[in-house]
Length: 239
Ligand SMILES: NC(=O)c1ccc[n+]([C@@H]2O[C@H](COP(=O)([O-])OP(=O)(O)OC[C@H]3O[C@@H](n4cnc5c(N)ncnc54)[C@H](OP(=O)(O)O)[C@@H]3O)[C@@H](O)[C@H]2O)c1
Image 1 (cartoon, protein in one colour):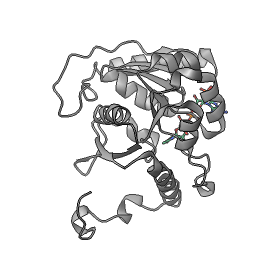
Image 2: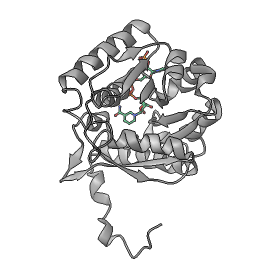
Image 3: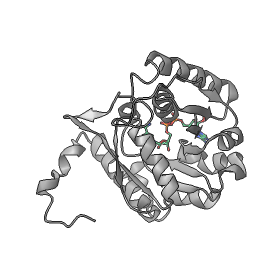
């Protein structure tokens, strides 16, 4: 898959490196071409050091058929070049730069799968009436899938993220079946398990959950401990 990443910061680095190591083609973009090129160079080296997919999960997922996946050099470009490059485009910029970045990315985003990993700048001031995922959809006309926003960047660097013997489950919210399928593939390529979080209307809940959990972590609480395991979660019919 060709993955364009709007952003050349920590999340672009962590996710893009893992996807490059899994055999995908990746292009990143920040505001400064020199810094973006340095980031791409660093990602290529890190992905290659992980052994062309052996340090991560081969493209196709943890249980997918192992394929040979040589690391392709991570590229950098302008926001518009990244938007045109990606079969899938990941939005990984800070809230302050979101609207300007999407405007610079331009019309190539229309109709594309867009993976939105963003969170609000200040968790204690999150405004559920203005979800970032909806802003991205409105500004681009892309098929937005919200995901990857519940965990700190260091979690996405783990190869793979497994806790207490269980692969990390990654909820995804989106409406477009092809975009959801692409997002599921990218989750599986990290060695994680995709979880259907419902349609894009529920992205606001995912953003609010991140804001709440980040608040708990900042306060030193073990946020994972606030939820019971499935057998103790009540008598529910599966959806
Ligand atoms: N870090 C985490 O643990 C984490 C976890 C989950 C979700 N997220 C979310 O993922 C997104 C990216 O986070 P990150 O940790 O990768 O951030 P970061 O390391 O600070 O990188 C931010 C990226 O946004 C770009 N940007 C564009 N306009 C900007 C502006 N006006 N102000 C600041 N940056 C601007 C930056 O460009 P330059 O390269 O030119 O600086 C950079 O490429 C954020 O929405 C964040 O909330 C972060």
